[in-house]
Length: 430
Image (cartoon, rainbow, N blue to C red; front, side):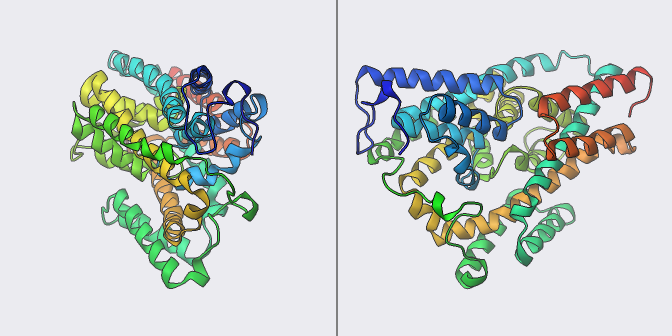
């Protein structure tokens, strides 16, 4: 077991319950402070946040084993929800139980919520017809295309294994692009197919562990979550009921997004497009350029990208209250599911149903990311139906820089915006 923080050694006992000693409150305050600062200062989404959190809680504070969060990354990716949110919940549970998980999740979402709410309030005041601003957004969309492509490149070898993965990828893309099947339908179909393959052909597709983890990473010994933490889940359900009461439609819409979010916020892009873009969209009827600008803004601001997007779209649906309800809906499913999964992590990871779900989710997630790359490619390199060579070059360069770890997200964002402004300044909308 990892060393327990000295000021919270009395907080967690062997059964996983919390006591009411003062050290508990110091622990909760420390969790809130550290996660708030990580979310406020780290730009680039969940992967960047989990690296920063591993450094803070593993190397500096020594509350976890150094590298423990990175070892748990496959678990966080295999449970619906945001990687950053799942990481925060895990650390909170390890340190201070149910209350620690709730405080950590609040802290990781709060900076994004406040910053994006301020941006959303001022977005409509921007001079969007200004040529320089349009050029900056076009450059940003090119960089965002590259960031998504880099994610595909870095995860391709780990995900695309065997004939089933290729079949699911091609069939999913054809279903979405040619037949109009919703991304959620592709994801659910692949999950059901994965479970069927796990039970029908276990020798070909089964595995004794979650994809991406070695045998020595399987959890043994004392569970991360105590029975007392599970008994407190009705409190979370009550909090969710209070959150959704003002705008139940918005809450449940984003709760569905949270259930469909596997492996990062980019997989939600095709779902956002179907829900918010175009005259036939059921909730908002944004133009493709407007949508692309909003998603580019979420990349520029600190915190988890999916929280940024939920806050922005929630504001468009219902003002500040809509932002709060949408963010709460997005985070709620992962909180419940992660607490339940961590109650018996080794049994959960060895479940044949879970293995089947992962077998289906992996290629489906890749399919959604490829669709997201096509969406942003159309908004950047082919914006307005015209080939944009500068945006295309920015997409290629960003893909190379991210995949080879030559530059971080923020540097690429600044570079893309600057290139877009420079092209607009000389009268060339690249």
